[in-house]
Image 1: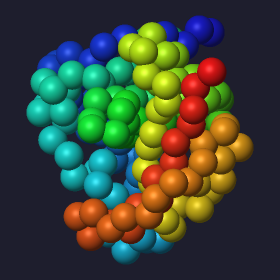
Image 2 (image 1 turned 90 degrees about the vertical axis):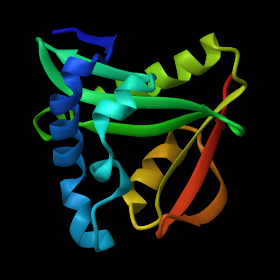
Image 3 (image 1 turned 180 degrees about the vertical axis):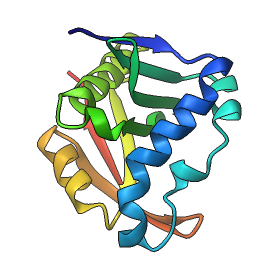
Length: 150
């Protein structure tokens, strides 16, 4: 079955919220609070643009949020619904983000993750991302990684 990617619409807000909350729920105990993406108002995030849905067989499999900042194109959030994990959805979303960055003329793509999400940091490093900063923002110790796009 093929994975498709489409722009999120306001009608998707509740499904996006549910997907993100389920995807990040396992991290709450490790970091001691809900990760930032769990607390966002996805109606507002979708209204701001840059939200994409990965669908598999008509079901929401993952969410991708991209945003342009002063540092370039930010992969702000990537969440895979638990029932679709370990099926290549995360890889598909990351490749989609990189392709979008190239198409928009960006020389790189950057992201951040909580410093306690070591598995995610390792996953991004295996995909060619390099740590370039650590910052505390909104009370979250974040690791910033960037990939130069060929």
